[in-house]
Length: 73
Image (tube, rainbow, N blue to C red; front, side, top):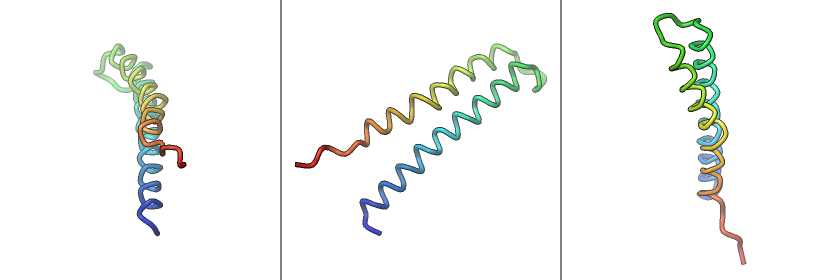
C-alpha cells in the first residue's frame, strides 16, 4: 500500500470517528434531556445536543475541506 493510500485510509477513519462521536454525543444528550440519566440538569442535555450536531455535521466537512487534494495539472 502506498503512503498516499495509507493517508487516505487514515483520513477516512478520522472522519468516520468524528461522525460516530457526534452520534454518541447526540444520543447522550437526548438521554439527559428526557431525564433518563439522573442527577444531570436537562440544560446540559440541550447544550450537548448542539455540540453533537456540530460535531456530526460541521467537523467532518471542515476536515474534508482542509484535506482536499489540490487539483492536479
